[in-house]
Length: 583
Figure 1: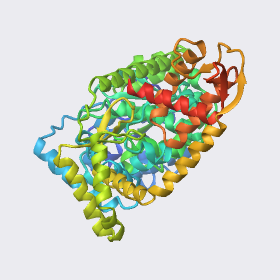
Figure 2: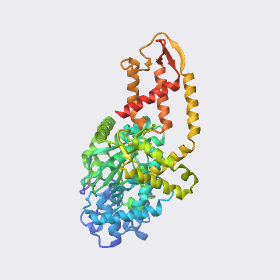
Figure 3: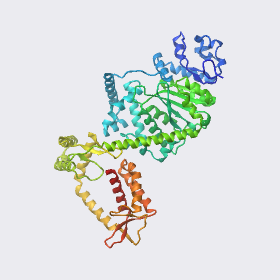
Figure 4: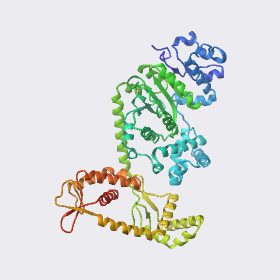
């Protein structure tokens, strides 16, 4: 049964704005909690809006009834926390909560000034953080205008708050994915099988519907949570959250978060990882405009209210705990501008959630594949003066010229101090660029080339000087390794070739060679984006997979076949990966 206000009787709260004369009551009026039925409200509730507050807000000392229930005391503490905000701040948070669109205009001059202030704040707080590491690796990535604007919009154009959020964002990214992926957009190939399983279980999914202000709605279904490790769940959520963030390119960049624990999705609440998930949510470059926690029973709702007490005041102003049946919650959330259909679809079954998430996952695969193809079609074409870092020895004119410059100044570098060495390196970089040369490396997908940041170029040239100093020792080591490889290359002669064998030489149509090419193509994206050590592990795993059924065979001068050792087989697999990358 519903009241004349269209709110269920057992609703845990409602946000109703009435013309109350007293300023303090007006502020409290923004958060009204109904823990009892509507009969606890004065009889004049429906007739006289000036007496709309529940009795436990108006009676007793300090506005609290002496016979309050525990839930009333929690509500009073929540209201006291909101009193720390100014009325204008509260009104902004309430506009967000109820889907009132923010029509702030972004003037170019103002945005430029705010971006400058953001940069100043970052300089003050970045020391020793993951952001500083990311800036050293690729300053263009962290300084990209649209990327920084997302953080400004998420914090209502407050440069200091935006700087703090950027620091948290990169700290979180470093912890989840490591330094290698700190300055690249995370894609599906960066997730392992356990991460993808967490992504598909439906515990977090993006609704097809938006609220009345056109903002995204994210559902959290705690009863569906399942993961092998906490990191798997966090990485999966990071990918989904960033997928949402990349679609928020307007000033109205808010999202609505709904925790739904009703009906099919009512189960044991899993509290593990909650703190890390909250920090992840708060670190994303978006503004959480509303957080709704929906429960069917009072004890769970009471726990959620108690947990809300530790939230910051501004966040608390946008948090609402609701209690009711599935049908009642549709009307409650509808009063906040959330379409009823977005909640109705949950009532179908858990299978709907799984199918929805699987369809979204396939869409992501298609978009990332299309993006890769676009990069392939728009490759940077290297010229003869470019210095190429392709993960293998390159003999182009640009690389040879760089080597010659380094060899000419090797003694100067060895005898100089750190300042003199840096000056020398900068002179060499300038000399390369005078000839229209660039320093290029494969991008994160391995399908295109991109220019190295200046700091990374300095690191590369420093390593080149070190290599020159140890050249004789390295050369002798290579000769020794080559002779050892040749002596151990032939293991045994074989009489018959099986279809599972991989044959060396110009053999393309043999079934074993075709199978190897398929394995390499399947692993190529992961291989190209991996470190050198991880690449060796991938190649070794493919060798082991082939040798479960077949062998790696090399022709002999006698016209027979000889099985090669694992080292030679691993070299052939690595060569296949390089051939795939060149296509």
